[in-house]
Length: 495
Image 1 (cartoon, one colour):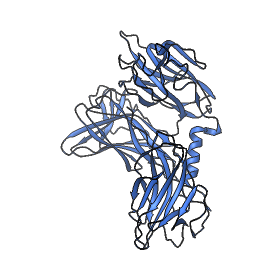
Image 2: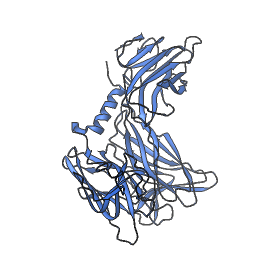
Image 3: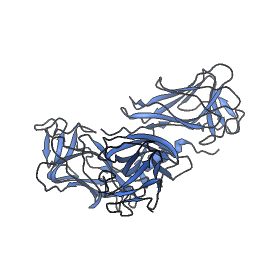
């Protein structure tokens, strides 16, 4: 039997993110600045603390929640690192795989009672991001990729502000992760357009349609770039759309991702920005006049087809029928979202061949009443499985399938994604999805072809749970098939 289930994709993604090249996980010394404990010791902060594997120079240090630094509460733990004026924090990183590319993810905020300073992130002395926070709330950031030359290195956050006045920025929750997805020219730095706007430029890996292109700082079409000095522009006149498409590579088949980017608009305008993967829109965001400087955005989640490792990400400005609107993007990143672990998510055990079985015995899965597993080509007549060569079926209103779920993170927001189809020639059996007995959506298959659907969101309260699919229609012989079940975390928008 072909075994090509979503469980393999989950395992592959987990290995890529946490054990690339079968190496140990990437470890950053004190990534959330919890050592030494300063939050309960007057004055609640400390300059240049002594931390094994980390170095604080000049006016750098650690501050606890509620200290006189007045940072918003740490996004992780109870303490944050700070850089005041000209300062630096260096942290040792281990567990890298030589030759592999990585990015640094972290949270950053300005000190509420002062102005902020520009923070440079470097790895082994190579700058991989410059960013000046304008928000008191913590913003999640992702740097450019770098390639590891050995199993260890030094990550440095530094500032060099020699101006008058007190300036300070905070950082927290530092991680180094494999740069799984390659995004071409994520900051739109090629070709160099100086302070002009160039429509439909020739740029490797990018496609511009309509009135879309690249604008430099000073063009008047967008706020100053977040990274570098150029941004992507989409201008739509009187309802004529424009778009920017980026070719993505190094995707993991069957894995789920979210796009993180910065968005802004021309002064006194707003725009509706849609995001699509392989031409299918999965997220729509309203960029309002509040975005006069670039603001961080997180898209919804898209899933790569089971047999693909590349695709296209398209940002589109649909325009307004009665006006000309301009939308801008910068510093695009595509990040993996790790799903929870589901027992037999594509119903590949036990092997059915071209047959079917009611209420089979499967570890971690329970089948009740008229539910079971059918192979491709069985008498159920169901379309071939979207993943593997078997699907689950629910016949009638009392049929139920329960799957054990593990690897959830309490407090994290999740959604359930799965494929659903009607049994050909029989009545429709809508299916209610629930987590630990709490309904998160009822889905009615629209045709005999499998389509992907996403549940309402739920917040995990414990590490393990039970996901149930229950038929709802007992009027006559009704049948619905499901396959390729995933429970995936949903990124929250930064504060």
